[in-house]
Amino acid sequence: MRMRYLKCLIIVLGVLSCTITHAQQEGRSAPALERRILNSFADGDYEAALGLIEPYLADHPNDVVMLYNAACAYCLLNQPERGATYLLRSVQSGFRDLDQIVNDADLESIREHPKYKVVVERLQSRAARRANDALNRWRSTYGTENYRYERDEERRIAYATALDRTSHDEMRQMLQEEADHLKATLFDVEMRSYVLIAVPTPSDGDRIFDADNIGGIYEHSRRRLIARDIGGALRHEFVHALHYAHMDRLRQKHPLWIQEGIASLFEDYTLNGDGTIKFHPNERHNVVRGLAKAGQLRSWSTLFRFNDDEFMDHASRHYPQVRSIFEFIADQDKLACWYESLIEHYEDDRTGALAFRACFNLPLDDIERAWRRWVLERPPVDLSIQYGDAALGIESRPRGSNDGVLITRVLPGSAAAVSGLEVGDVVVAVDDRPTRSLTELQTIIASRSIGESVSIRARRNQEYFITVVTLRPLRRIMW
Image (cartoon, rainbow, N blue to C red; front, top):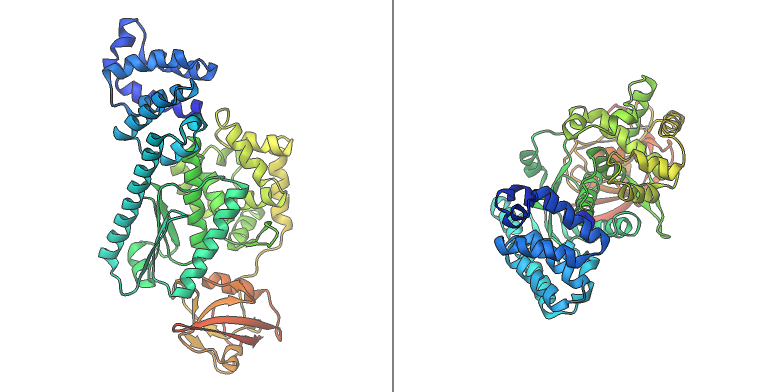
């Protein structure tokens, strides 16, 4: 952690280089001073590091990064009182990274020191105030009539959701399970700063998002996540929140193709009781399969080097491709290995290419060719329900509900009509598999046969019920 964190000094010292009198007096430039500090920590010569840091602090006593690194140096020299004092000074001067403080092994010797505890309590209190501020801002904008406001102290999450008690609790359980799985397999981190998770009403969601094809967003600078539904959109954005927490702790910024690839991967999955996970192909697979057949896939060497703008300029083709790449990695049981290798080799290669070679022990071109074959060998996901196909016999509209599929019409004589489903009911699960969006429901029903019975869990107003529906042929094309 020390080598990564000290790289922050390049920015701090570069800005102040015109006033670094100690360096000037000895004929040294600011970059040279930075390198000497880095080398001193890397060599374990913490007295030498302090010999450079302390004169700088004499001229700049409130520099939060220098104060923090002085604290670490004193702790490593087994001088806990000075280490704790400098850490407190750093926080008093504006250092706010609670996650760094809690996870930095260099501070191990002062975990029980009263000043360390004051620092942690102060930053936790500040984080809680920010969470309350975020909830109050949402409350003042969208009111209280349709929203439920809560804080999860353990998980550091503030909730503002337009959900009933049952859907809200099921959402929280889903996120807890996802967070536990990601911590155990990939990110190994807990959020120290509160994140606001908001699930707006459908009408509020339409006002928040300019485009109908946007299901959610995570804004790390504001620690705010907004999702239109509590299905794939929420799972996707929640991965971003956890991934950012891990990148902050590592002092790494992973390319957008990696961030979106991992987040998209977790849109559709089943967590098993033994802790394993099964990722399901979704509509993105059909897109990438079509691109593969048309010879229009991006080469990995090109895709991996795109900056954020280049990636987003063709998001409709890049998102399916990067999800597919991570599906392939997971299918080969190398997801954890790949991510660990990315972190390990980050300073040598930030694109992720080296992580493939490290885990697969093959040249990158060979791995890409294997992935392309894998894409074409997998059948497309059936999302269409055509005339004569097995169907429920309902009509709906996208984003009609934020916790399931709103029934806007029940066709006469259909399976839904026979089973007693009504207009206004919201289908939330089929055979215990959640259907939080129209696409999720279509995917499940399209895979079934005429005469097959499915268990439908639905909400009618605030009441939940289960009905068994025997699928009938579709007599009118709806979707």
